[in-house]
Image (cartoon, rainbow over all chains, first blue to last red; front, side, top):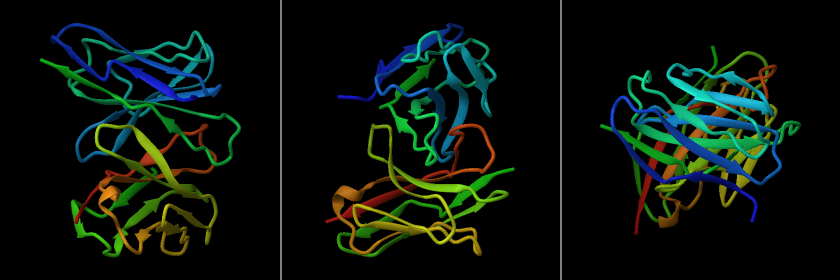
Length: 114
Length: 114
């Protein structure tokens, strides 16, 4: 079955530690995205990548980093510089040339930092 | 800048009631408009979309019409079911922007009681 996998579903970390969230897709999509979801605030774009070895900052990139070494993978690192990292993180992908720009979402990772 | 505003929730309905969730947007040009649904503990799924003015998107009994004159894309369903309980997000992709960069509303929680 084609889809997007995010792991783990729940992640707990101590303040001051970096943590990497995994996102893998087997849809052969060129573009991939990371969103952060907080209660009552909808989704906010952290980073996106249109092609391997290239990525751009979204609206709230501070305190986060990404890499795109393979088409299938787009890991997100939440660094200790992120002031409020506890949130639900969603990864998505899309066909680069799709005029409808439909994005397919993974199941999400809930990160709790204490 | 681009923005999406949804009616405040939560919305609570009895089964078979009529549903309307209001969505208005601010964007230049002719954006594409989307409704996504998020079931508890899951990622988002595309519910329906419209890519030009007066288009009607429909899926699973839900409908929304792209109204350029009122900058609106209200979601409707004639008879809701308990299984429709979820969070609904209105989103837009502005014309001329980077691939797949979506702007989301804050989400509306819908609860349907038997």
